[in-house]
Length: 247
Image (cartoon, rainbow, N blue to C red; front, side, top):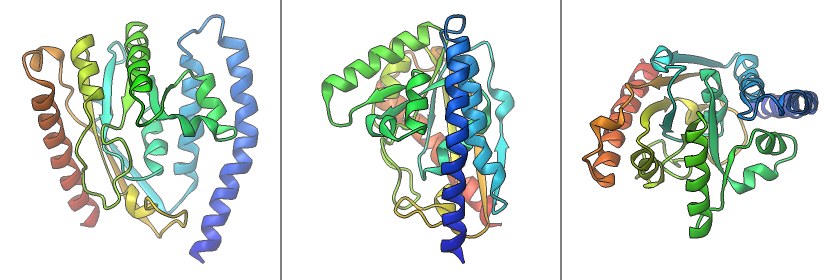
């Protein structure tokens, strides 16, 4: 039964993408000259991603702290990473940002093509030159008024535990004097584990937007100390969220 439902879900995702991508192209064509930041296209993309969490009755998604996101501020947004579902759940924040994503995702038909239309930021993992180019693109995007969304673990956790962070997001926040916005996710790995595409039964999914950390609070900190503090905040909230979901 789970296999059949999973196949139905992925089929629905594929068929709906055949409809959504042409709409994305139309929005891009009509708004690109007057909306260089792709705000409207990103809003549509968030609606597209959110659709799948709304359509699956087995996923009960709770959002906490969304009111902490100020529409007039740009952030370096950082979240733990558990599952492919994280991207769909984060889409429900309905706030403007540019994803930083591995280059392979941009090659996915329809979905990846839409990422390119949005001018999301590519990264070839393991290549120093690509990492440097990614940082420059992020700096430019922040200067234009776009927030940046990154998974500082670099990849999905295989067991749900928070992995060590990479320095990129924190170097970026320090060099651009940007506010850091930590986000904690729980429950997505139980709904769809890292390895495999078979959806599991009903699961509670929780996204928590934590208190923002302005540059003035970490200007004197080293990158290592900043990473440690943000890691501790997210880890504590993940543990709390897991207890809440289990209860």
